[in-house]
Length: 242
View 1 (tube, one colour):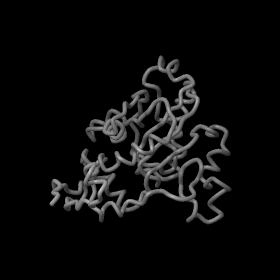
View 2: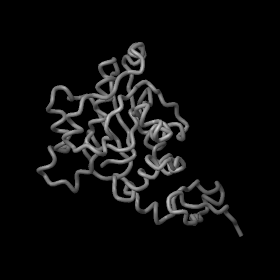
View 3: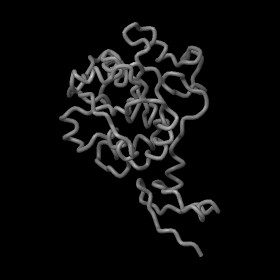
View 4: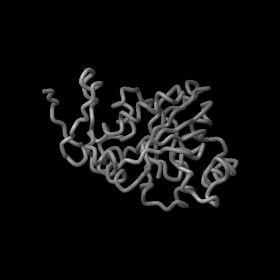
């Protein structure tokens, strides 16, 4: 009889029952971080999505889409200031109630181990994207002190990659407390950590990493700074699409 070491779900603490297959008997079981019930609550983004922000289009009415893009991205691209700033966002999961709670526990309640839930799919996504530097969206010094770690930097490091810490953030009110319009109209909160980085950024493709794509304001603000500093292309990868 084959015995596997007991493992427990990082979210609900229930025992993870490994699926037994011939492949796993020979190669060993893949490391699992969620039980089957919790894993099934994560909704992968699939099917036809907005070619800019990765929002699923199939459930949108025609009035909320313009061809291959959602209405939000169409409006961003209509504005000269934001046109072409963010080339493409890729998101792993839909920001449903379950994922909202997982990210809150990870991000606001300091449960660092939960980062491992997202690492396998994050690594798969990275293999499908061409980029030069991985840049985490930074926290302000105040927010970093409050939380103890930057969740996007943690994700990059736990995936075995090297984050390029080239941006700094001005401390402001939490984005989650702002309305959609307040987020869109808020002044840019990002700057290069050092002005000398501009020469290194020239002609690079940057992949920004954040936890949630909501309105796209945060990513576009960061992308604007990088593009003005000489980056050729700015993409983004997020855990969730809100």
